[in-house]
Length: 492
Image (cartoon, rainbow, N blue to C red; front, side):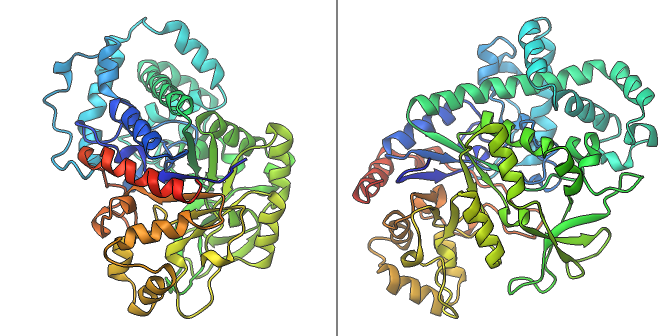
């Protein structure tokens, strides 16, 4: 149950680190200390699965696995799996404020391979237990990644037919042929979870809870779709019949074509939603609170025929609604979930969210559209909601002021009594913290007053996203004390 409190949104990748990307190492522990000093109770992160095309955490190779890029090399050195010489002179990227994913792939993965080779015989029993505890997904994921490497990283849709369709003889052949490579991918997951659990425990001991993020859909090019094809609307050749997206709206004349496979909800209902329950159970083990992306898609979703160039020719289809979450509660008990209920909301969607009991989201940057009275204005909030200055899909507050029409920014200034002396970003944060919503979250970029250069993602664009990293010196005691002061002022 979320009571009156606040937190900061910053992805693991955005942490400072000398090795090109944020990790589960020293700087992550120092960020937990920063959150404590700042009087926060929550650290919200983005999905931490292995990233595929476009480096998006929302298009992962697995909904259960972790991203090897977040494994900390110094911690591997402490375990005797690496020497400093293995990685100290490696080029992980030249910009401390941007992730270079190509360098991560080309230069970090070979170092992790060295750690694996040096681990021979070291974690035999631990890995055996880890494999048993994660048997629902780990074996399929490791095989999928090993075969993917064998086929030059191509999507499983382009593999040889026998392994694409998971013929028994092909599965046995590749398990034998690629045994060492499969063991490597299992090792990476063992290390990932070992480092993550240690960091999460440190956060929890210090009174910080982790909010994780679960995308509603999984990627077509993923172990999930390949190994559980019956869960999705695929044809006999395992190609998607229909895919996900959003209908045309004021922001996009052609809508958004996400392209993820759509779930076979009638099959899932017959299995009492077993796959989805496993998925949420996996998230309970990873996080204290789970934010479910595109929650409205469980009530009804926009379905587009496969191969369409845009989302225009889609249609609304009814989802499982409350039946799914009744099954989740029956199997797992009360789970702390945040419903990402942004976008076009019908009365049915609102009734569904209310029936679930999960808090929805209010984004302050959406509040000041002068064309209409907005549900996102703080005087319209109920307590059971999570208030954001902006999310990873929004501009930063300072970027919003630069790029939004004057009538809207003038309205924000009047409503929140903003002035340059306080700083527009701090006035926005004050607006979120002073609201009645049980939990208020601000992006780290907003506390730092950064502009659009620090924006995490521009939806419906490829390239240039998910790159931002914070400089170590920005996370100062002075800033922590200032955050603590305003947090206390509003009883959070």
